[in-house]
Length: 264
Ligand code: KIV
Image 1: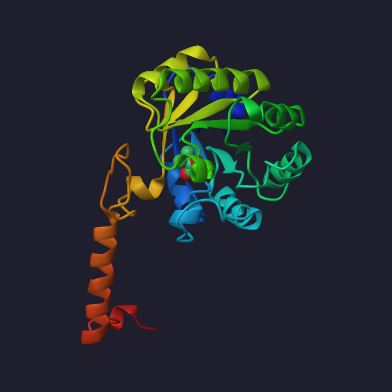
Image 2: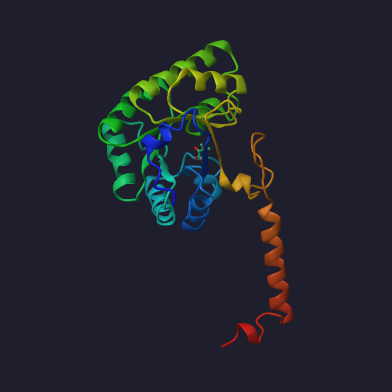
């Protein structure tokens, strides 16, 4: 049986095998992600969209993230559980970041946290790591900054590409065990991957990254027509679920459910 993944072991997968990461926000999905042998279960703040119906990730709270992380932790035996730190839970001060990151490990059963930002976040990362909290970085398109950047591919210009490479190096020096690289040209994804010794986990960053992450709802076809171009949809669960719900409705209305089989 596969033993539990630690941040340190994930870090050392660089160059040996590609790392798989999927989002999970609840116990049942976490169990299935774990059963599939996925390396990292990310309790992404994308749950603001997928679970709570918000237009972006900005409004999700610490309490909501802790609630979902606790549920995920109940379903995981081997995957590394990474909890996303929500907007304004780590930006105000390193003390605030340390206190909130600690809550994910102490109260919710996370193994690590993810925070968005590059070189300017290095001090925060170093403080968390020094206090025993593994950190996954996140650069490129950082959805908590959409009010500044919008949802668009980052690092297309030479200067911004160079900045992202130095951001990745600064995060590595600060002690991250890996870096999510979101929505950058594939060439830059590969260049960032080459520039650091920690694994990069790409989302819309091309095949040159050390691993890939997707929002599970996108992969399962549960995001309607809103999934971005970088998503590969493996099944149309939306179709299957609506079909099952319709069949159930028809059975209830016609009296085909319940039958004696479902009766005591
Ligand atoms: O919140 C999330 O799901 C994420 C991934 C898209 C990396 O941050």
